[in-house]
Image (tube, rainbow, N blue to C red; front, side, top):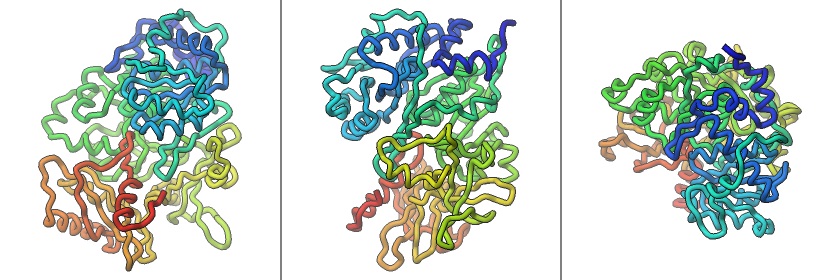
Length: 536
């Protein structure tokens, strides 16, 4: 037995220099670090490629503080760029690779990229995205993974020209992620430094700290460009030397197969994934050995109570929920506690971290227990952020040390937070507030419903009317009779004023790549059809 894997000792010091993978490569060079559809990496191989890329970027003129934009699928090279930026003192901005060339160009320009790295899957959009650098375009470093277009260097050639020994003078870099843009243009969440995360100071995931005997393995289910996978499926497993199995695209049956094959112990998911796993037939669900699983963390969207209850019944009390965002930390709750308060997203991770505020009396005050208001999270001096280049949006989000994501909810008398919905999703019909998440949760209990988005549509008499847009289970046929049945089903479970007046059926709901439904797109479609302006 050699030194223990100490989360507040040597590894944390190495991470503070961007050298965490060098720390692991020196101890377990042959241990698998990544399993991906595009090739695997041991810790030794991963660390060497990180060093090669640092040297290559420096040779092309990048210096600490410069920005790198990365538009790449779930390939091992994504993580090499991520870690090389952290080791070279660069500010990395991952970009959603599903964006159009024009949308990506906005982010490349807004983040002031000095280098643009992308994968072959976006080759058709890469030149337009790179052009977003504007006046910097002529000097922009362009590198492509898995393919090549004019004006770009080939990633394998770039790193092959360098050697892989550890960098002698590492400088810790930062990340600037962009919000999803569901209520307008994406916003860069910018911090001057890399604030310590409360999640990194304790082993709240329960990873085995004895790295010599550990058999832990993590399944990465989401897109690497998103904040949650980067935190829970990349940063935390790396701290404990845990191999990460990277899914290229999420699929429920493939998820079960990978859990069994790699003896997965930990994973991060979103509620839509739970619903689709539970929708698998009993033979498929029972046909895989999932006994290795001991920790599932989830967030990104409210989870219907019945969905989570069924998941815990199936897999056991191993489900932990968080409420947080790119901007900062919020709450946390384990299965045992959640079962005593179904629907809660937990208590604040830190004292005074979360408040619910209401307007009234000429100002804004803290809500009483059970009173619905706007949820605020705290950003201390070490974790405060700004929306890059946009003082107005930054000022709009903050109230002193606290900022809001636009979510609404309430605290119970014991300090547990319950979310109702986003202010952007709120339906006001006849002057009454209706929270679509309530309707969604009921409809998801109907056996015909695969997924649903309840929205408000323009209505001359009521201002807005409640409409449910439903994606049906495979093999289920849409009909007027089924629509009426779904409306009756909701009326049997909710107050009638909350119930949808109409139901539309669609083959596929628009969604973000985290799994969240893109309700703004739906609202805009219906507003356009009614000749109303969008809600951007």
